[in-house]
Length: 101
Image (cartoon, rainbow, N blue to C red; front, side, top):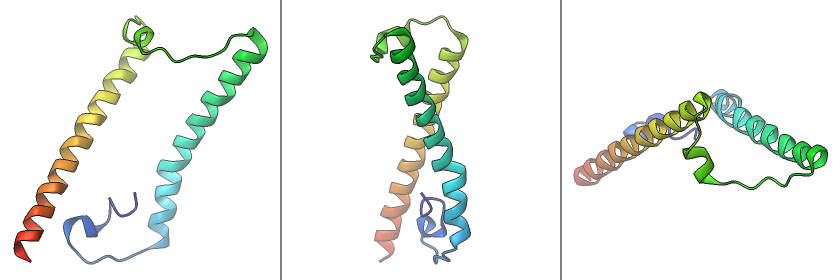
């Protein structure tokens, strides 16, 4: 992830900084890990306290009337579209770079 945000993506010189790696760790990986741990802890608590085994079912999410579920799905789809557009842009930049060589 550090390299995705680096000048290397734009075919510029790489100026590696440990601070950049630390920022990616702090801003990206720790929130993901914390969200994962939150999910795991609550699944374990649900199983222990209620005796219910958690099973993911995609159809229950799509049919939800919960506004937070809808927001999360909307945000996820926006993120996927943004990611695809960025990857297409990087692919085109890579093709232009190859042509120059």
